[in-house]
Image 1 (cartoon, rainbow, N blue to C red):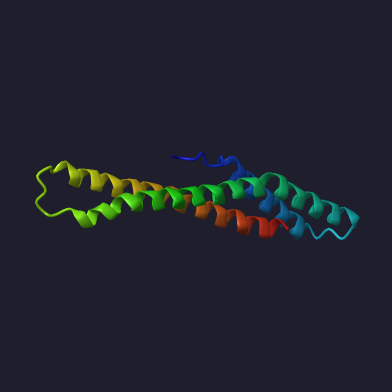
Image 2 (cartoon, helix red, strand yellow; image 1 turned 30 degrees about the vertical axis):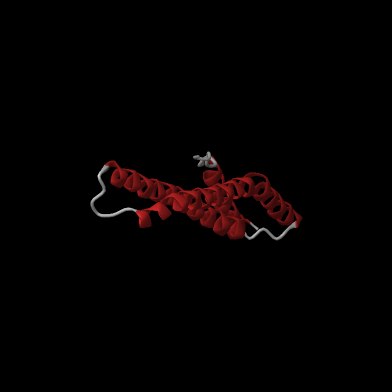
Length: 125
């Protein structure tokens, strides 16, 4: 079961917020408005970036559970031989391995996105 990943617009917003935070830092604002800007950026990160990051973590956990379920079917691999009368059994196992590879790539993408969000929210905060 494939879960819908958070859209890339959250990543774009995170990058924009990080750039904005860097520009504010470079501006060297030394006034009350600086703390307001910092607070606003932090709130933006909480409202926009954190939910998307949470979605990626949830997706990765779902992918792990999906892989665990497929591994149960792969246990039957110990019960077949190299000369099965029904050769389609080999194709079935190959498809299970293909599924794991696809699911693992999806989980890996979510973890990479989560890493980017974590790095960007550290800049914003």
